[in-house]
Image (cartoon, rainbow, N blue to C red; front, top):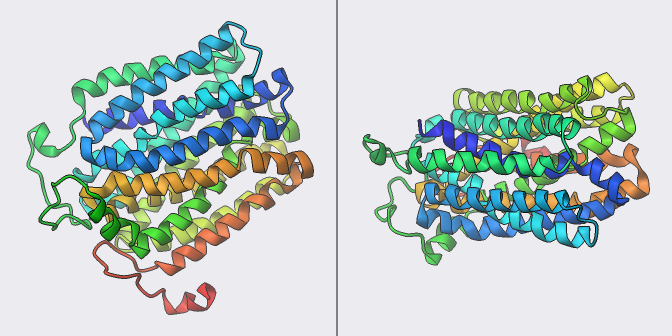
Length: 427
């Protein structure tokens, strides 16, 4: 009753965020944008999200996850509706500037989504269960991609294109009403007993006191494990958005796959199915095989990214490319859910879960911003053959960061030594 509506709300957030990706090819063609031009809009949104999620993390820790999701839902719904109505009114001038501002405002409110999810569930899941939670978090994200890409592709093919902004606005508002009456911040608010979750702050005497700057510096900003994971999440952000932002133009221009065709649906459903499988597999391996350590399984998944993203760029077969999209997303979203959703609760604890989630998500979206104007300019200059080669170095760097914190678990006072078998690779 608590988890499902919260997760579904986050999925509708994605529908109202990645509608820009779905409409990218349409906007580029309709308004004669270069890829770098369109990338400016995406970068503005990504970097706004990055700054917002960092600053809103401590706010979410103070006001609670439920209030955070409600604030985010109202704002995201309003700005998606505004964008849709402006295009309905045949908006034609200063679109890059106007869309950059409006999409950025949408992203500001979107930033409350992940923070609220992590904050609420930090009270409901023990650290030994959180690998599986990471899998559930991955399912939520993947469901959002289903709504954004597959349903968005259907909307694009059967309705005026700007309905990809209007329809998500309505979906988000519906979930706002449901969350208002159902979601609870803590087990005690739902008639259960609060319990010791076994995370980094579960035994702190002041764990229920408001977060202050001194605590933030002492336990979060100077924690070498969190800093290392943050570097890895920077890499995840570039890989994830480097693939997703340019996926629709890639399928259209390289493989001539149009929205709502069979192969387009294979690719977009693959994002969802691959993300679900990746999240569940990552969570299972972390909890059951690696004793709740997150780094070893993340390392394996970074390696998978390198192999299959290169294959995606190499293949000339449209059907193979469509199926490879889902396989790539399995490796990408597994890591994303594990580090952003699970590690943030482990090392931030119930007291600072949203703050750490905001820090990791924010750094990830700083990298995402580079996939807009910078990767767009690279595609304008070098073309699609260079696309995947510009992405995979970040997967390699991420894997090296995981070697650095190979044995990290909540409560460790320092960065544990990496396994001897991998020490040479780390150096």
